[in-house]
Image 1 (cartoon, rainbow, N blue to C red):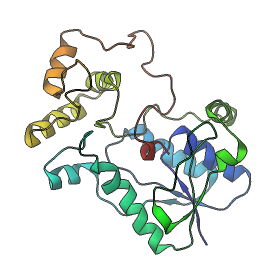
Image 2 (cartoon, rainbow, N blue to C red):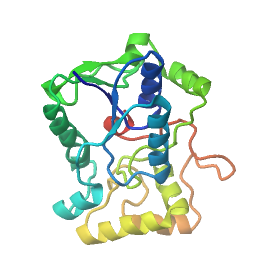
Image 3 (tube, helix red, strand yellow):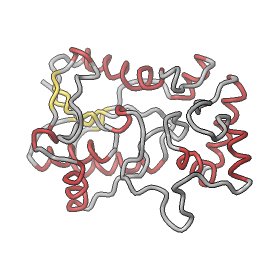
Length: 239
């Protein structure tokens, strides 16, 4: 029987993998990228796989770019197809090919209990909850291990990201921003929900605000944008 760690490269799944390796457990790292994550995430994934000396398994899937063109639509708060198409369904296929798998999920003791996202195709374990660890415990353990997790593990064009993350994308990754604008023009949709806040939903209009010097609340030009390791994203993208 196989034991697999649901691995996104976020703080919880990273700590879980290191913890299980320290305990001498045998497992594989199950990583399903969307293909739109920042390059530093993939470097971190490879580093952790080397640290724990475990196989890195990537279920066969198609990236975000493929599905945007396939649907001729963007994932957004009303059409949340990205997680299911890119991550959940490929993992279910892999679990069906490996019956009896125990899937270890990085759910902490200070988080609400959840049922298995992949249905009855796996038996679920929650090693962080078994230890009674909360977020502070996870961060302390990562610091003790000398492992720094990227601030972002989710897609750069994630519809669910905060306004400050959109500002960072515009400022730091202009090529990715231009790709997002092209997708919005092609589909006639926007990644951001028009009723989410008072800022423009379309990336072209949002760029105009940023270029005019408007800063989202909480952005400090003299400080790193984010201090919550792991950033924000849907739960599957942060496992």
